[in-house]
Length: 110
Image (cartoon, rainbow, N blue to C red; front, side, top):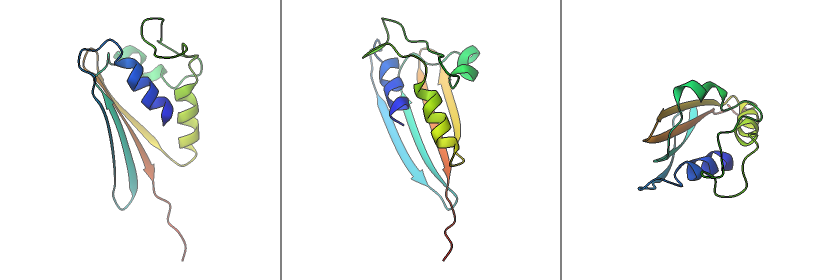
């Protein structure tokens, strides 16, 4: 999850209004984690690529630490998919991104 947070922070580096929101909730079946930012947004044409290894949009103008190598979201994706996680991304260029991770609860035997 730290990679999603870092990307949200990096996306807001040049934004006038920097708002990072983290929400968590659950229902009987799933746990929800939503991270939203007021950053640059993700263009529709690259949304399908963001989990691919070595894919990055970071340049010297839009990162807070070292330039990314494009593995953060790939690692996050694969680590959470083991638990059956699903990902929902709602993004508008120039307005920001909402990144939701939905993790199913496992039933425990008693």
